[in-house]
Length: 315
Image (tube, rainbow, N blue to C red):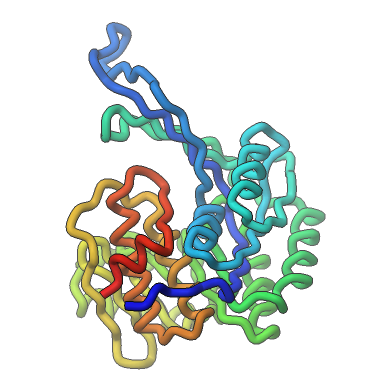
């Protein structure tokens, strides 16, 4: 297959911006203080997480992106600014009084030992939201697709989400949402919502078996109840399914081995959005996103892939 070219794909991302910290080391003994392993740290890494990981995936595949969100007045917020500059990701990042959302993972060998989260789930103040709305209103006409990356950390409230979807529809832009929580009415009007099977089960209120028929039934109920257009359900080792008012599309997985699923959903939504912006059909975009996810789950931690890795793995 020809090497894809996403240089003209322009994606505006709004959502919960995070920093993912990784502490890598080795485990040789158990602590005498408590029955826990002692990890001797040999390497420390900072990576973009949450909505920032979606932007990082798009930039890594050669697309153009603008990342909008909030960070804290702290060192971790500065770290996000440093990494986005280094990766040529355009940003509108407002500094707020809340600390920067951070997930710190301690890895012993190839095993994650513990994750420590720093998160304040309060909504940003009205002045901050007004500034973000102004930035989105200004920049949206220049972009093909709006991605809403909701991690349930307070930014994507019902009112703000409705504003985002209204604005994008008015501007004639496609809207793709990575959902969180139990209120999906706020995503009404979005073109595609991309839950995994657990999120699908949480919203419908019972465990949904990971079979084509069960996924279709649950997805159709959710679409109807929340006035949605379509659901693209990521199904781990079963691939992904698109449920809409058309015939369902089921695509099998593309990965034989899985090291780490953290961030795979970000890779799916990033690849899907740049493919659609480049004129792919939804089926073509799904197949490409599926291949991309199959590559990143073989990597440890929040990861991206290059255009060359994608091209080598496309059928």
